Image 1: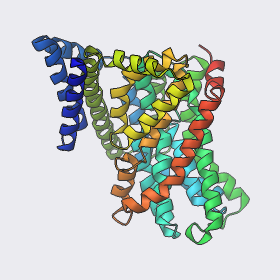
Image 2 (image 1 turned 180 degrees about the horizontal axis):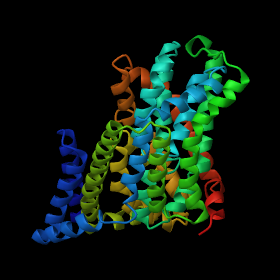
Image 3 (image 1 turned 90 degrees about the vertical axis):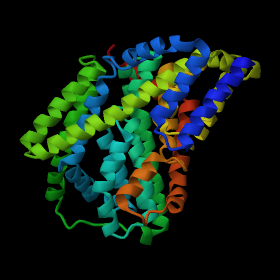
Length: 435
């Protein structure tokens, strides 16, 4: 019982630091340091030194800045605008067609970018003004971009999947491939909802027809080819066993730079800004990794893992009940904590419970990413919602967006239930890949 009170004290300190406005990484690191000092005294500093090195000097994690750079380069170039226009040309004539094109753009862009925030920011800059021009409902605009941005961590490559694979010692390549079909299903569910809603309220999402011949429309498809080439090289290389995820990231960045040079869309200013943004995002992620790792080690030393295992064994529930409880916990945590921090903080404690329940950890990785994706749009800490608001302006109020986002949240919930009921949907494709 003494350890339990220490654990609650450490968690309380972390929450107090977060409420004080301290950055998430430093709040977790400080609380973890306090826990380690209580547990082992000054010897905690040697543990922290080892953690700082061991959790950052990793070949697997070196893929993170490369995938971020790849996405930022495409997002800052004119290529992203060309891709969105092409999708709008083909989908705009249907009810809510431009919003559906926004989701399709997010899905395509996600195949070249491992970050949900980068995807949400890019689609807000590219699609937001176009949707406003044709008088789409602001609620639909904001909700579509916030929810569509979440596809950035489900459709590979995915930063969250890289970190998940690193912590759980699962194949990042298998995790990437496992996310493809669920990502397509989720994107399709968004488009189905948008089409049905827009058909019912046509004035809020009017169809847009482009005065173009069939030849011109077919010619516009060339704009999508660079994204498809990058996605095929990255994912095809992993699926065929030619590349490791880190090697595919390096190949993807190289091909992206070559294509942008060939298209004359890579100016020195874009390259400098992209490198600066990639470094900034990577530094933020790695600081969170370090802070969460320190807190995670403290929780482990204080026996949180054993307490949780005993708790679930004492409940005497089925494996399905275990997954449902874990899902509810993550949905609740997603309302109050930043998603990446939640994953890093809880995963070392949760995945042994899932493994003990007999579930495949690659399957659970996809389930967990969807749960993290749900956290990106749930108030009050919906990161993608804040990104959309920051780029689109004050007219996109939190209350309006929360109401408009609810149907997208229900789509995520429905897909989550489908994947829990039929795990083979997740595992079929990775089981076919070359090892």
